[in-house]
Image (cartoon, rainbow, N blue to C red; front, side, top):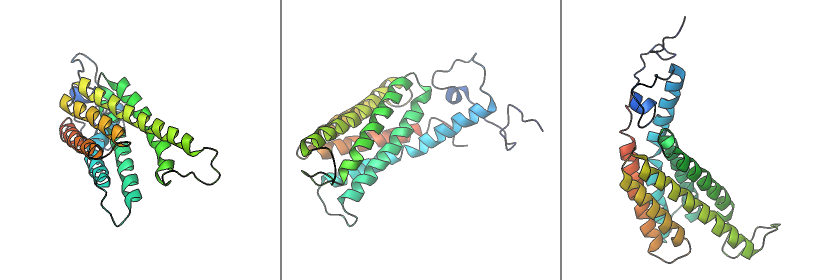
Length: 221
């Protein structure tokens, strides 16, 4: 039995809107996507819409660690959880911007951000001023690696914020807040309070705005 171009593989009718299937600013005279590609695009956008809520949660956890309050799981668990949720939100934001005119900046920001996460994860469990047993790097070299990881992560968020600002897909103010949050958090990693907390609040505002407006870009069904 053949599958109609207006139905999904399960036989349900496919609701196609060129404004979200073809990306932002799709022309009306462009041909509609095949069913397989349309369903794939819809799935990516649906994941991005839901996973963007991980960003405000990550901002809350990160802000909690900046207050210096003891938590039952320990600061390391909270920090790792916040970093994991931020990485999920970063992938979701890049997926949301994949159909916009700033997809190149979003992709570059995603690669830089994930690179920063990968470099910073092994260093999160090390106490300050110490190295792992058998490590070929000295304490000074590890500090340089930590600075490089922080810079890569901050540059990734800045590029994603710039992509949001110029995408004309969501509120550009959220892109400005995201860039300010990246600068504050990056500088706050080597500064005193309240700069890290301010960066977490800016990230919370940007993440909430992106998750709210991003969830209204495509239909729920």
